[in-house]
Amino acid sequence: MVQHLKSKALFQAALGNRPSSSTRHFALHRVVTVGQTAPMIGVVIPKRWAKRAATRNLIKRHIYTMFVARSTQLAAATVVVRLRRPWEPAQFPSAQSRALAVAVKHELAGLVQGCMALTPGAAEA
Image 1 (cartoon, rainbow, N blue to C red):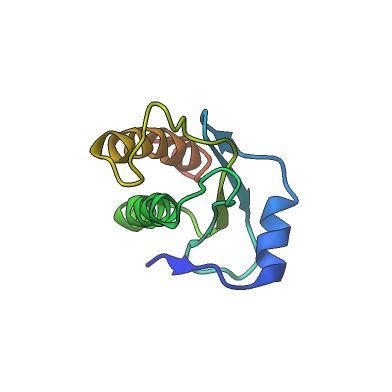
Image 2 (tube, helix red, strand yellow; image 1 turned 120 degrees about the horizontal axis):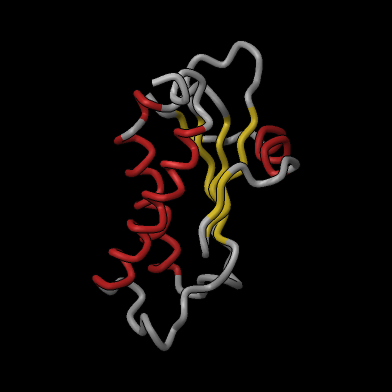
């Protein structure tokens, strides 16, 4: 079961590392801590890259859903997904457009695949 990251220290530890995986809009920071038994996920969506609360919530919802769906395939690590550039408002004028949701899901699928490639045992399979 994936746990939500709530500790400032764990956020800082993960964000202190270089991104393990990235896409055009997202960066995934990862750190493995001793004694961790389940994956932990944190999300950073700055207001400067997603101005509308509805857009930030849509992105967060898709991130959590994607990682929970694949939780059994992920290693016990602390993962922070960070939005690193804005979605073009001209291309996605609505905060909760279907096109934006599809684009977010597509990028997150690539990001999760990159994270799973870092999972011990995934390279052996």
